[in-house]
Image (cartoon, rainbow, N blue to C red; front, side, top):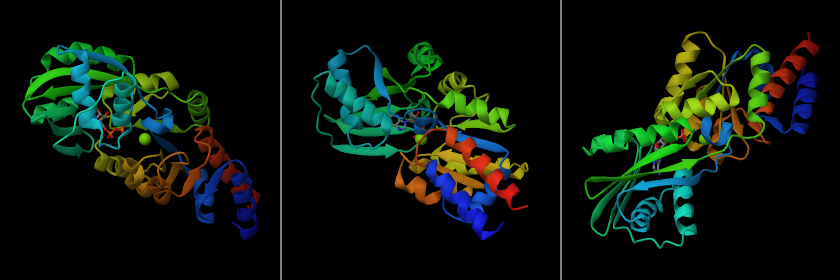
Length: 290
Ligand code: ADP
Ligand code: MG
């Protein structure tokens, strides 16, 4: 490609809120055949809201423990829980201990009671019997909600669910990518049922769920080993290694700085239509110079 056509292409893309970090990425993007999108904050708005509380304890007491356990976590799920509980006028406890377990949840000590909030795998690590939660949990997940289990003082104590909404533009953007002949895959740390429900809302047929933060880059490598030219689109700290590993990493401009640093392209608008736009602009630039 000539420097002039690359410069013109980059300038035009920038007008659409698509920032290429270098001319070589503008050249390579047109060859992408597989687009992997993160769920939370990429397909969805990334602003989950506390929607459901199920517990055998007095609800306010239960919520005080849950929100206190989450108050030091920076995870969007934790923020949703803390905000939802504070909105209900419930005051929080001091925590004697706190630890985030990335991809699983949090563990803390409150009023000398071990308080654990997170996935069934986290509960299994502590030998907590959560069998009584299963049908309720599955019902929430079918609605696309993320359900988190809670154990207090070594006993299952209840579950809470949060809901995130899909971006208005995600469905149309996925349809455009399919029309262009691209494979679209959603990848998330969230569970299979929730992921399938969200994917269904936006027309994504392939889902890789339950991926631990360190596993996302591995999943990209697996696709590349199958000969795929993969674009990864994400917004979180969790996504950074996968963004760096992908043939082309695209960071959502409303996301974390770490994701933008790891990526080759920043999509300022956060609208997934920018993925198709970037690919089309790359193709156009490359044909102009032939
Ligand atoms: P995502 O890819 O959606 O950002 P993560 O990998 O961060 O998801 O987390 C995977 C799962 O671990 C979440 O869906 C949730 O069930 C659980 N989890 C993570 N962080 C927390 C937290 N602070 N509190 C409760 N559960 C959590
Ligand atoms: Mg995300």
